[in-house]
Every structure is written in structure tokens, then in C-alpha cells.
Image (tube, rainbow, N blue to C red; front, side, top):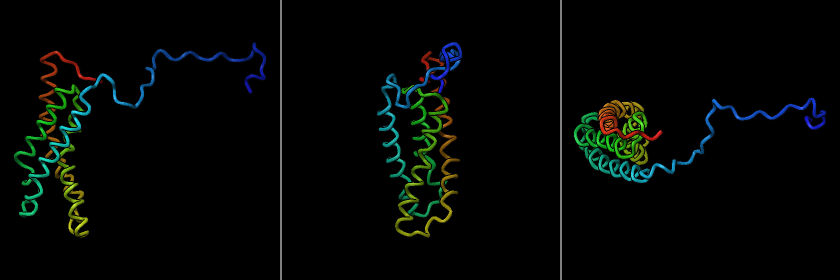
Length: 158
């Protein structure tokens, strides 16, 4: 329709705005070589936490007590390693490692529900308790990693 107008009436195309940054693709950044290493660290930590958590549930230990000890320390270490070696920003390291314990609890819930559908009728509360235990531990690890980045002068990837 605009081609039907005479050249004196047609509007010129607008140049891109200098205030708007160019669009970036949704693919991982090529400058982030530790992406596969992060996945391996998360999977290994998940397996170790699951190995320690599942027998505790068979011995009828309550949920927050079953996550104390090695799983909390492992969550803090995963968060520290994620923010330090991969130089991920603070919030991303916090939430990636903070979801480790809820993922372990959710895997156990799904395993038990597959055997007996009425066994975990309050599973959202179990996930909330695991978040309440895992996120503070991840907060400590991410804060230490952020401090190490600041002290050594390394910058986080954005």
C-alpha cells in the first residue's frame, strides 16, 4: 500500500535506535566454555545428595533433618564453584545451586508416587521445605564466590 504513494509522500525507513541494544540469540554464549562442566557438577551433586537422602527417608527421618550435613555443604560448594569458576552472576549461581535439594526431593516424591499414589499428598510442602534448606546454603556459596570474584578482579559473564 505504501508503494502506491508518490515518492514525496512515502516515509523513509527509520534507522535502528541507538538506545536499544541489538538482539542476541538465545543460544549459549561462545565465551562461556564451562557450560558442560556446570551440568556435570550439578548432576554429580544431585546423585550424591540423592544417595544420601533416599535411605534417610526409608529410615523415617523427617525431611529437614534428612537434608542436614553433607547435602547442605554440597549445595554451598556447588554454588561457590558455579559462581567462581564459571563466573556466572550472583543470582544465577544462587538459583541454580538452590534448586539442587528441591530437585532431589522431587525425584524421591515422583519415585514414591509411582509406587503408591497416596504416599505424598503434601509434596508441595516438601519442596518448600527443601527450598528453605537449600537456598540459604546456596546463598552462602554464591556470596563467597561473588566475593572471590571481586577480590581477585575477575568479572562475571553477563
